[in-house]
Amino acid sequence: MYTADELEQASRIVYAAMPPTPQFAWPLLALATGCETWVKHENHTPTGAFKVRGGLVHMKMRKDRGETGGVITATRGNHGQSIPFAAARVGIKSTIVCPVGNSPEKNAAMRALGAELIETGHDFDAARETAMAMAKERGLAFIPSFGKELVMGVTTYAHELFRAAGELDAVYVPIGMGSGIVGTIAARDMLGLKTKVVGVVAEGANAVALSFAAGKPISTNAASTFADGIAVRVVNPEAFAHIHKGMDRIVTVSDDEIAEAVRLYFRCCHTVAEGAGAAPLAALMQERDKMKGKRAGVILSGGNIDMPKFAEVLEGRTPVA
Image (tube, rainbow, N blue to C red; front, side):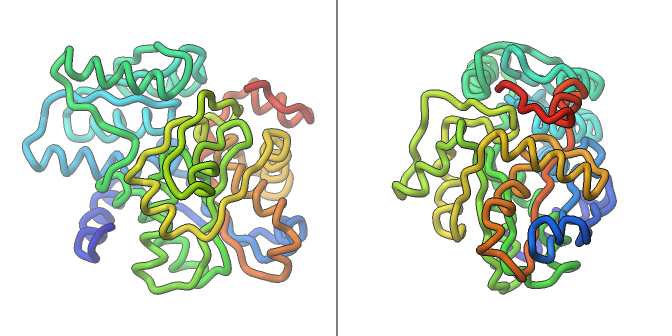
C-alpha cells in the first residue's frame, strides 16, 4: 500500500501537527474481556478521532503539488473534521456535505474549523453523491473518504500501537469506508507480524460483512446504527480488495452491544468512546471465549459522541439510529 519512505514522509507530516496517541493495557478491561487488552486511544487526537491523520497527509501533499483550489467532501463527522483541520493549516478552503439529522456537535465542530457546511440527503452515501455533483458545479476537488494518502496518514496509529504492544494475537478495527482497517493491515504486513486483523461492523450497517462473505463488494439499501462512523451502505471497491486479502475475519455487533461497550469504556477506563470507537471492544467481548488468555488490541477510533446520546447510553439505554 505504501513504501517505507512514504510512511516516513507521512509520519513527519502527522507529527508536525500532533503527538502520537497513547495505547494502554487497562487492567479492568482485561478482567472484562478475559485477555490482555490494549486500547489505541484515537479519541486523543486534535479532532477526537483517527481521521485527522489522513487529512493532514492528504492536504499537505495536495498543497505541495500546487493543488491549492477549494476542496469538498462528504462525511458523518470525523472525516469532515479532519479535512478542514488540515486544510486550514495549508491555507485551502473546504466545504463539507453531511446528511440531514447529522450529529449537532460534530456539525458545530466542522463549522468551528472554518468549513462551509451543507446538510442534505438522508444518509452518508446520499450526501456523498451530492458532494460529488457539487464538486463539478463549483469547480472544487472532491476528496473521497478512502485513498492512498489518507491511508498513509491513518496507518501511523497502527505503527504506534504495534511498536508499543508488540505482536498482538488480534487487533479489532471498525470498518466505515476502510482507511483505518486497510492502514492497520498495511502496518501489520510492513512490520512482518502475524497479528490477525479483525474487522467490525454493525448489524444495521453490514454491507462489508456481506461483501466479505460473498468475496465481492455488495451494497445495501440502508445503514441503520447509532454508530455513525460505520453507518455506510456502499462498499469502496479499492478498500475492499485490501480488506478481503488482509483481514482474518469480520465480527458483526448489535447496537445494544456497542452501547454496552461505551459504558464499559467509561467504567473501566474513564474514557469517552463514540459508537464506532466502541464497536471493536463490543466485538472482543463477543469473542471473549475465543480470545481468552491471549493479547488483543482494540482501536478506539474516536470519542465524538453527542452529550445527550452519551447520557442516554450511560443511563442504560441504546440510542435510536
